[in-house]
Amino acid sequence: MHPLVPYSTFPILAVLLSSLALVTACSTPQDSAIPNANLSGSQSALANDIEFDAELGESPWPKEGATTLAITESIQQTIKSRYANDLPALRHVHSKAHGCVLADFQVNQTLQDEHQHGIFQSGARYKAWIRFSNGDSDATRADKEGDGRGMAIKLMGVSGEKLLPDESHTQDFVMINHPVFFINDPQKYLSLIESLSSSNLLDRLSAPLSLGIEGSIIAAKINGKKIRNPLYARYWSMVPYQLGAGSNRLAMKYSAKPCSQLDNTPQSDQFQDPNYLRTAMKNHLDTDNACFDFLIQTRDTRTAASTALSVEMATNEWEESVAPFFKVATITIPKQDFDKPEQHKFCENLSYTPWHSVFEHRPLGGVNRIRKVVYTSTANLRRSMNAVKPSEPTGNEVF
Image (cartoon, rainbow, N blue to C red):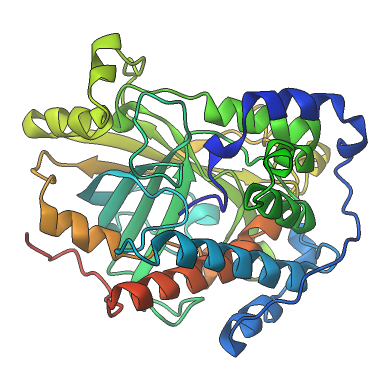
């Protein structure tokens, strides 16, 4: 759902080995051979129909289009192989959901004019389906294992022209509980995926060498995260998005933070339940609401410090001392019984992608450009394998 490879595929030994591989530490894109991608014309069109906003700092990586298609093909083959005899086909990553809940997204009653773009209109209110998940590709993996955790939000009743035609009234925000991603360069991404899917043990162990030192450290941090309750965690977009249109547009990142500080350290007795994060969500929402502040930070190109806030380098955090977060909306998850088989099935058939978006919030940067192709094609593949027709949610569903 969020990244393209599972965080837990990085063995500690390989991470340590990668720290010694100084030659891989350089973050400058390198040329490499690109396998022939055997994908549909529509997928190729998605990969090649990309605009770059140079004024906001976007620039293509070498052989980006061909590499994106090769990444997509590799992931599709993995899904086909994994679920050929074990339907339903699940997401490639973030396969395990802790819960999918109906929520209310309320924009602040007052916003500065420079922030009133797209869905951020003073007092605007939307229904939302929010899916919480583990980052790993194994839906049976116990929650006690360290992993990245995801929060995907789908707003409904959103007017305006959309970047993708398959949903006409939604806006998606996808996040994990870490502020940055672990890779920038699509070719390194492809190398990583190929290593992880190799039948050779040494190739799989050496996969993190593709990340370099910086990426390996970030991946290890993400993979080491253990939480008490998905409702108590903070989540970040990791990568940037557009805010506004025309000459006044800005680059932004966003985050969802619990409205009040909650102890998110897991208790040892929780580990006896392999699905304790779902249980924790259920216990909380049985008796009380949950609340998140939705925050954004914007890059002010008028300041010299803003040059450190890269759009293409997804491994770089936008320091809050330069670009502080400020609240633009409140997410309220009312107490509810979400743990129902039909509701779970409904949510598993939803497609979340940052490209389900109005033009004012267009995804920026190389990672997001890869996502445009991969997320769309894998969602279509899962629906085809599961014989499910695409359906756009309204927020009025009852289970």
